[in-house]
Image (cartoon, rainbow, N blue to C red; front, side):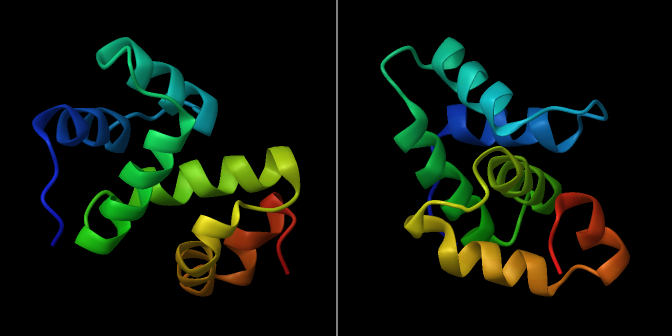
Length: 100
């Protein structure tokens, strides 16, 4: 499990328990509120580390799916993680996101 700084764990825990329709943009915005010197590239690293840790599955999934929905693909850094997340979803879960 990768070592994560406390601010990253706090951020991931916050989004894991959210029940609203948040997007990757909300996650990135909240990150910059918590840690002003960060940006979307830092968010990518946090999501990948969270997936590798095997924790925060809802946060990882929603971040990736909302990113995919906005752009029609995910950044190359996310290819493996996205494939793993999508392969764990049923066809019914994939349909609203435009995934077959």
